[in-house]
Amino acid sequence: MKRVTYIFLVLFIIVSICFAKDTEKTADSCRQKGLTYYKSGKYELAVKEYNKAIKLKPDFSDAYVGRGIVNLMMQRFDEAISDFNHSISISPDNYMAYYNRGITYNKRDNNILAINDYTESIKINNNFAEAYFNRGLTYKKLEKNDSAIFDFNKVIEIYPNHAHAHLQRGILFAKLNKNDSALNDYTTTINLNPNIAQPYYQRGLVYNSLGKPDSSIKDLEKYISLAQNDPYLKQSIPEIKKIISSLKNR
Image (cartoon, rainbow, N blue to C red; front, side, top):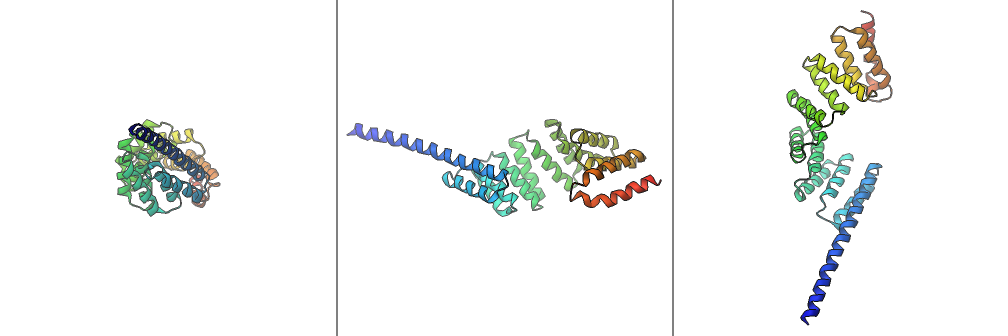
């Protein structure tokens, strides 16, 4: 009798382990489907798949992060923060949860909370360039220029070809009247990605301040040619044309 009981116990354990593994595999499959739907912009379908994953595996930290990102994209900020909170409570070392919660706080202008979350993300993964970049942008917004430059330096140290880090650092250098450093960063940005409009505009302004109208005009005209394709930047073209006209009439 004891032998039969023992055999049934062993079989029960084996079946339970197999069931748990199958459940985990199915939950991850739902997460992957959710990610695919998210990447194709099908946000509601993505949420449904993440819901399935979480129902199958309630302690699935990455599924909460995935659903949180979708909620963030849909501007459901409360739901997004709730998802990232759940993820962190399950896995306190999930640096993506802190990072994305930081983005959500930025969206709500809770910049100090955003900085705190980016800092936590960096503590867990000190090579996470995008966390440094977003923290740098937030410091820049708060006019903490030295801290922002430090973060953009870290981004460039980790990822030297990060065009936007060079651009943002250049803007700060120009603000601090470090024109040579600003020009270097703008030129590097353009070399890395010649189709970004803003560095031409920023470099054109620096050339103008240095008394180099020909170089300034060339950059501002290039800015206009690129801005034509951007509905937001296109609004600035009439003003840029006025600057060019004044430079030509000197």
